[in-house]
Image (cartoon, rainbow, N blue to C red; front, side):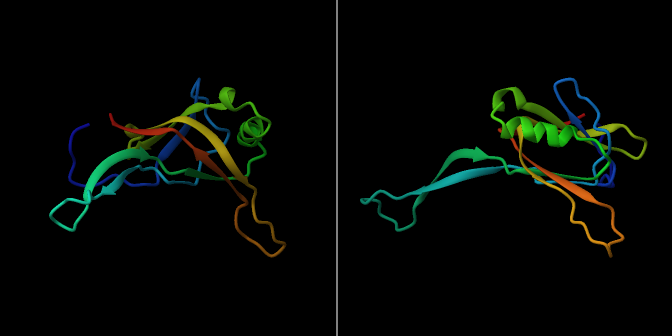
Length: 150
């Protein structure tokens, strides 16, 4: 991908679920939590001359990723959550790919969520006075997030 002066818009993206990258029956409204954090440990030996501790790079961790979409009458995401809930945890691990698209629909950035599994499902908030779309939320825990530029 060549460098460009303007950043890409955040509203054009795809979410694909493995292993066959099956398209979901509905697009997603929002994806949050893409990132990572390196854990730093502080250590100070008792005989060190200065008072400040040394900082030692440790392990890293990735946050949970939250997906939100309108309720469309498709239970694929809930079924995946139900699979994990019923103990089929190894079978449920997937690689989920989030693709950021350019204005012309070409993939410009990828985030691969390795070892992803749903850990929380939240159905829509319902109200007789509401005018909003019914939104369901799925939270994924993953073992690694790998970012790629295409």
